[in-house]
Length: 203
Ligand SMILES: [Zn+2]
Image (cartoon, rainbow, N blue to C red):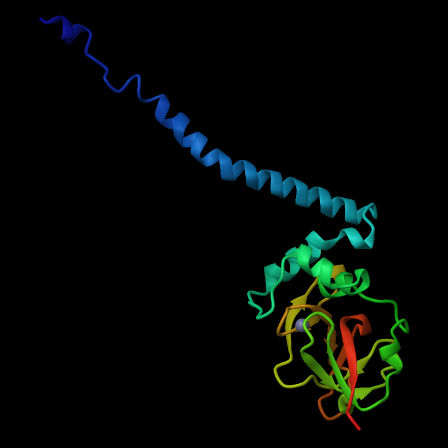
């Protein structure tokens, strides 16, 4: 009997513990990153629910909601920092954070001249004054957008199911569309005036 039969070599022994360790290390990076993300998202949601976060501090949640339900890519795309630089704080809150302005706060609510309402984010024409009507809601309202000017997605925030409306060129949030509008479409595009600029028709 050889000594090696009594004490068989175990060539893999020193290696084996290292393999699971390496595997764990390799998968731990993304896993840990995910955990940190989930924790911070949960903490943010809890803070919002508790009313601890002011309206202007809600961008992450609004952005997550938008990106989760829409896979659209937009012709005009800037970094968040660039959008902040290009827009006023009020425009940024609505266009990029899906905020809502106070009713009757926008001068565009009382804009009755002939012309075009364009996106305040990228200047794409969105609505014609010919489709504007007084919805008595305090927000500029239209019964149809210009052709291919807007996109929509399902919005389930605040415990409601609504159809969100955004600019098809830059993705900027504009408002919501409801089915209680006037003829001929029966639709009411309820828009934030801050999300738009008005361009009177040349005389
Ligand atoms: Zn736009």
